[in-house]
Image 1: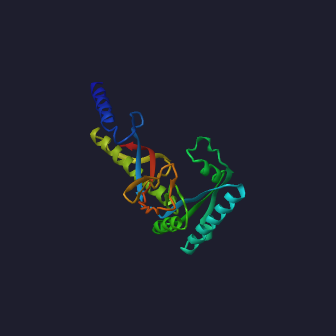
Image 2: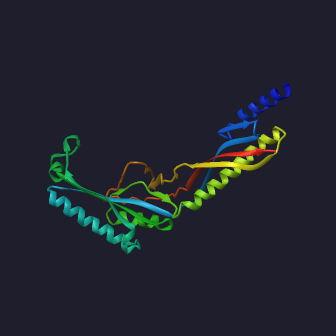
Image 3: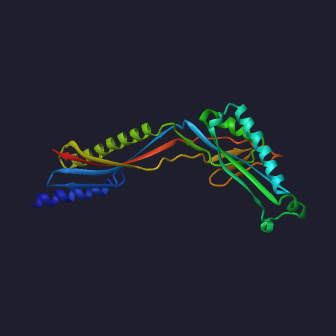
Length: 251
């Protein structure tokens, strides 16, 4: 009886010591199994950049704001296509035309007259990662004054998910084997396994503009027409997390 109590105490200590590696560990002495829950992360280089590009304009009249925005937008699209972007890889994400509420604007009277209406267009542009820098530069040079979050993704997520799942299963066996060795047992066959994949994590977060650091998180970067902004893109890896619960036999 004492030996059983001692063995259980040893196992309890192992569970506490392995908390950083395994989120949850259980041993069932009746059917001699060890169950572990672990999470593994796999990172790969992105293949595709999804770039939101926009043009925001003001006008004295509704028609004027609309026409100016349409004209500016046409120049941007033409420049993107000339740079090699395919028509099917440009999608309209947002169109807005509305009267400006200038009550909270720190504008001079003349500005208020000229900015009574505002128009906005935004497109999502999909290109290979190698072309992302060129596309942003071309769009800004053509008049785009809004560049938002750039998302970095892979063409097919399934191979990354499979790789993450496989790595998590291997990690689960390694953790279970470590526990079994300290209990003077041996890990046997995998009896049961289930997994849950966390959302893919990807994003472009920083860009360099001259000597300034511009953070592209949730806010639009406004590009002044009189001061070209030299954005430098830094693609972030695509990450996939896989959490596996696995039960192994103890021999």
